[in-house]
Length: 358
Ligand SMILES: *Cc1c(COP(=O)(O)O)cnc(C)c1O
Image 1 (cartoon, rainbow, N blue to C red):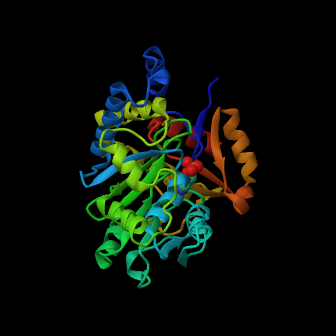
Image 2 (image 1 turned 90 degrees about the horizontal axis):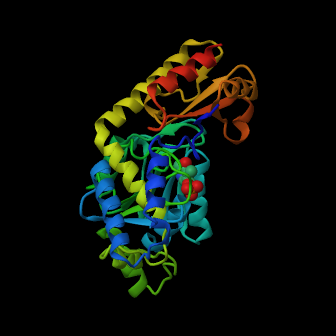
Image 3 (image 1 turned 60 degrees about the horizontal axis):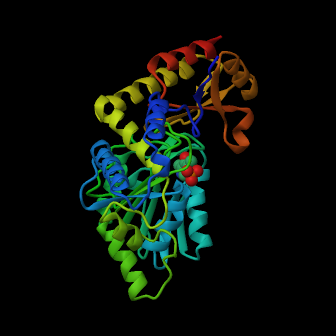
């Protein structure tokens, strides 16, 4: 029997993944040159599909990296001369902050306990912070920051660059890219692909900053995948290094499939499945939603406390072919994490709830 993966990355593969892979193999896409017209057409197609799905305007470029965590480093190197500002409430947002420190940036932090979220009204961005680093979905704790709050914060600080980690939620969050300068994700979460490709969205303001740092401040913005280099290659739909052509192709195809369903429907289905799971954990006395504030509850990584040892709950689910995620770090024994990505249907979610009920 095949398992269904409710794990928050790597996750269940999107149902059409296999078909697109087979087509790619039939068309020998793994062997084509990344300087060929065929590749430029593939990049262009994926770019157009992502623009449609995520509503990305022409002011922003779309670039490919090896992973999302690579983008943490790229955006810090390219968009911060001295100071960055980070909202931290779990392991992933913390790593973004750790990267800033490792790169010797003066990194400011506003920290909240694990399981709590941020609203714009309580946030003061330090005066000299150049880049505001936000995590839409903190995968370790199942906390989201609503796009509305991010937009509000940017309106309060229009001169600062805003970067959003949307790794474990894209395409769910409806970001307004007239306000958000940069965002990024990797494909092994909600896009339902194996790991091995990161996507970095960045606008001209980010490019200007990187060019200024490079030219006038004589700082290093890094040698690999610098924004000016990515941008220059992007003009002809190419990449500085040999990219993961196969996955850029498949990502374009899966994004096209999501566009056929329509982003509104994808978001509604996500919310419906999240509602089903949260309703269940709130009514069954053996479970409870970990995140107390409803507005901070993630729609894409749902975290539940369990009264039974989490490993027993996971084992029961596994017997039914359902793989749920374990609690993160210290919460391993008392929590489960249920990924709610587009690859998993309403019926599969209902099945999981039935099994957890037993
Ligand atoms: C998984 C994850 C990352 C890291 O992504 P990689 O593709 O493993 O580099 C970063 N941020 C968040 C929120 C994540 O969930």
